[in-house]
Length: 605
Picture (cartoon, rainbow, N blue to C red):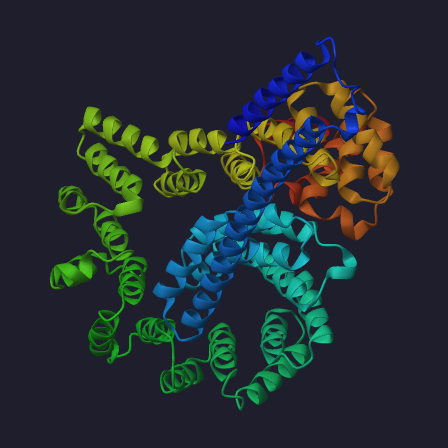
C-alpha cells in the first residue's frame, strides 16, 4: 500500500511539473505566479500530506495492534496465574500446574509463572523443582528470597553444594528467619550441630512466634553434651506437645532421645501415642514399625500387615514401605508383597524403583531382569536401563550389560540431573569406575559442578586415591578461588604428592601469613618447611599451637612426624600413636612408617 501511494505521488508530481514546463514555453505565456501559490504546488503539498497521513495512520495502526496483542498476552498471563493460584488454594494441583504451564509458555521470562511451577513440583516431591528454582534465580539474580528458596529446595533433594552456594549469595542485611532455617538445616546435614544450634537460635530471635523453630532448637540441644541442656530441651519439647501443630515433631524428637537413652518402655509408649494423632503421616507408621521390630515385639507382624494395607492407597507410601522393608532385611518379603498387588498399584512411580531395589537386595537377578522388562518407566527410563544392565552383569551377560549401561547413559544425557541420579545409583552399587566417569562429566556442567566435585572429593578421600583428590581439588579451587580451606587442602595434597611443590609451598605460606593462628594452615605451612628440609622450623611452627589442639589426630600425625625427624623420639611416639588412629592417605601412611622406623632405630637396645 505504501509503495502504491508513493508511486502515485511521484507520477502525479512528474505530470504536474511537465504541464508547468509546457505552459512556460509558449510565446505569449502569462507570467508565472510564485511557485508556492500555484495550483500545482498546492496539489503536491496536499498529496504529500495525504501520503504522510496514510503512513502515520498505518504506523499508528501497527503500534496499536502490537500494543493490544502485548496487552492481551499480559492480561492472559496474569489471568492464568490467578487461575493457577485459585486452583492451588482449592487443592487442585493438576489444574494449577496446567494453568501455570500455559502462563509460562506465553512468557518464558515470567518470574511468577516459573516460581509457581517450582512450588508445585516441590509439593509433588519432583526433582524438577530444583531446575525451576535455578531458573527463577537466573531471571531474578538479586532476589534474596529466591536464593533462600533455591537453598531450601536443594536441601530437600540433598543437593548440599547447591544450597551452600545459594546461601552464600545472600547479603547479611537480607538474612531473615527463612535464611537461618535453611542454614541450620544445611549445618545439620553437614553434621555441625553447634552451628545448627546458632542458626536456629537466630531464627527464633527473628520470628519468635514460630514454634517449629523452637522444636528444632530443642531437638538439637538434645544431641549436645550436658545433662542440664538436655533436661531443659526435654522440658521444652514436653511443653510443645500441648500445641496440636507441633506435638508430632516434638514427640518424634523425644522418641529419638529416649531410644538413645535406652528407655524402650517410653519409646514404645510415645510411638503408640504418635499413631493416634490426627493427620499422622505415613512416616509415623514406619517409625512405629521400626520400634516394634527393634524390640522384637509380638505385634510386629500384625502391624506390618496393617501397614501394607494402609500403604496401598498412595504410591509414595507404598514405595516408602517397600524401601523400609528392604533396609530392614525384609527384601524377599517385599518381593512377595509386591507380587500380591494389582498391576495398577505397581506401575505408579516411584513404586517400580522400590520393587527393583527389592530384587537387588534379594540378589534375584533373573527376577530383576523380568521386572524391569515388564513396563517402561517414563521419564526415568534411564534408570530402568541401568537396572537392566545390573541384572545382565550379575548374570555374566557382559555384552548385553554394556549395551544397556550405554543406553542408560545416553538416555540420561538429556538432563544433568538424570546423570547425577545415575552416578549416585552406580556409586551405591559400588560401580566406582562408572560413577566417577559420570561425576567428571557432570563437573563440566556449571549447574552440577560443585556437587559433582564434592562427591568426587568424598569418594577419593574414602578410597585413599590421593591423585584423584589432587585433580578434584584443582577443579574445586578453580571454581572457588576465594575458598581458603580448599586452597589449604590443595597445598597439603600437592606437598604429599610432590606435585607442583613450589606452588604448594607458596599457597601454604600465603595462608599462614593471612591467618597465623589457624591450626590447619599452620600444619600445612610446617609440612611445606619440612618438604624442603626445614625440620626445626616445622617443629617450631607446630609447637606454637596449644597442647590441646596438638592432640587432634589430624595435627598430631604431622607433629609426630616432624618430632621424629628432629630426633625427639620420646615425644614423637605419643603423637604418632594419636595420629595413626584415623583414616590416612597412602602418602601419610608412608610418612608415618618412616617416622616409626626412626623411632625403632633410636630406641635403646
